[in-house]
Length: 435
Image (cartoon, rainbow, N blue to C red; front, side, top):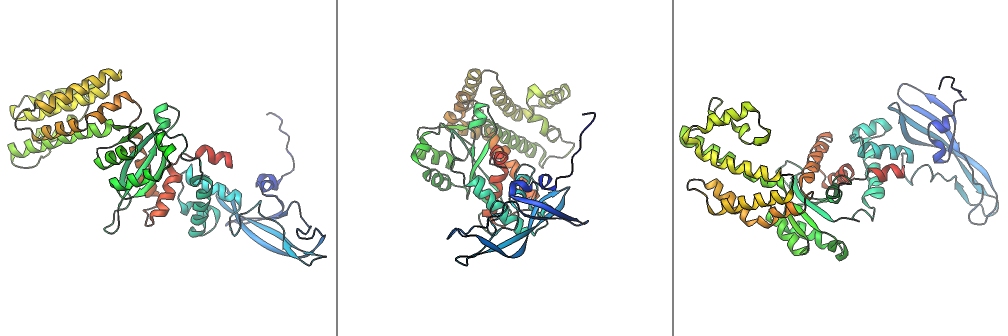
């Protein structure tokens, strides 16, 4: 716009006070904070008991933390009238419910700013408290209560779930108390290609009983809508899902299947290293130098890495490592097939091969073959339900690691679960629509 037309400053609109039913009548700025003096836009001098006309009795002042501007704390100084009914002598104050929740020290606009900062900008509570100019406890209690009311307690939060992911992680590293939590994730949007994974709930502990109890608490109609349960190799989750969701398909996701192969390869490499060198690997040992290259998919390996592997496998004492490495590469290739039916056939052939034809002297490969044979149905189910992987669940666990870093750790499990649900609960569209 070449010739903009400027109007007189409107502090009420700029500070968003019109949404709170307030009108700005003055301001005081300092290097520490900004104070906006305001009053209620539409007085209500009518008695709600008898309907009589009231007269102003006196005025009190109320101070509210507001949304900061330029990270300078902003305070609303509200001139709050009190009225007395001339008929029944009732006394009341002007209604501020549009501006602030009962017994709250932060305006509704400031509270929405704080919640958006916590959920979408991943700010710490300390940073939010600094922006609002309040104590940490005041900011934490207000934000968690608003998040609980607006987001976590939403009765529609569990609607539309068809694909579940379940995993566990360590939420605190202390010697006392249960350090594990079970994480339940909605993977429906990931499978359908319409969105990202969404954290549904977190439960203290890691066992079959924990997951089974959580499923038992859901209503029968909701459980009937679950089509797929993606999980890691922990058999407790599988048993709980089989008992509570007998109609659902259990899927062992590719990440954990390939991880089983990678662990078998590492264990074989370490055993061969000790048998032929009598010690752990050192930086000049060929096996130790190739430890990263061995777990790289052959299709992604560079020519230098391929040459390095060829030189390694020329030594006959490293033949056990080569055999397990070839199995690991076949597992990776099966999951990288463009057509699921080809990948399913390749994986099925591999499971049959290492389940019956394992050479002697390869205990790691024999153990891997037994595990794959026991979980064969769950492993092959992935190829029939592509997209129902527990990988996004692992990604959410990574985001929770970041959350714990921001907060410098948690001591209170209730606060941790609430913060985690806000951080990874997929509530962003609803949050913006409410604001």
